[in-house]
Length: 76
Ligand SMILES: [Zn+2]
Ligand SMILES: [Zn+2]
Image (cartoon, rainbow, N blue to C red; front, side, top):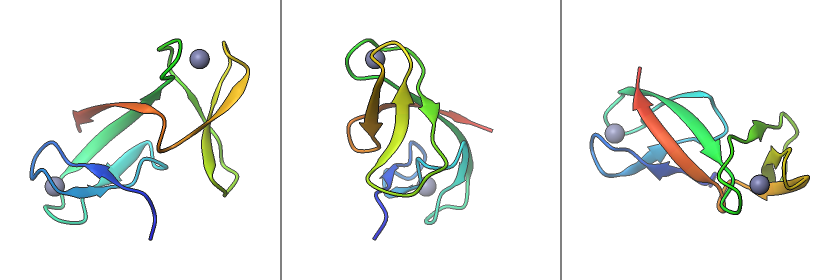
């Protein structure tokens, strides 16, 4: 099952961080999801390729997995 992050509305894991705008699979609310680097805290570039790593940090010049990334979730 794909890794999902916790929805700020219903507190259940229902948001797919691979999508820039994700719909919660539990409460159907929409959120804008931005990933940040856990090391330098800049906004991460979202990669289209499938696999374990979904983000890239241009400052650290390294791949960041969606489990490592920090997220800012804002309602759409
Ligand atoms: Zn929800
Ligand atoms: Zn970084």
